Image (tube, helix red, strand yellow):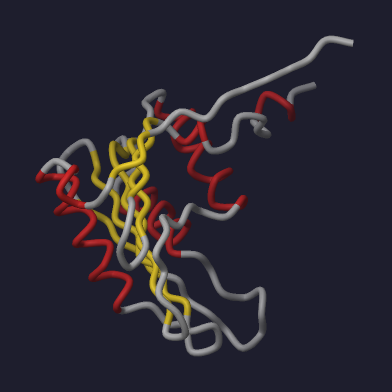
Length: 162
């Protein structure tokens, strides 16, 4: 038996002051999107903002539904909106923020598994890594260069070939 190991690479930043101006702006836009989230059941709001290669910004926020799994995460809403409005334009950057009505989110919030799969497929299809920033209400921020770091063993269309 041979051991297999993969590492996740990213940066743990002390706060927004360690981000570039464009990164801080994207984080601000994600926070604005988060404020518009529909989360009456969980009270947990998430916002996402994407920067496209042409400079356009696309945002999304989580949308809950009383028929639970009918809602959708902020990240997938933003990615699908970008794919619909800007077909063929690469996504270069992503910022995700989260907040709760019930407690302070003092750690960076990363996407769920389904969102990671969607993000990675967009990244693979555009053959360009997406820079990602994850944040909570306050505290440290994670910056990563590519969704492949979030989902190292992924399912891809090559698995569907005969």
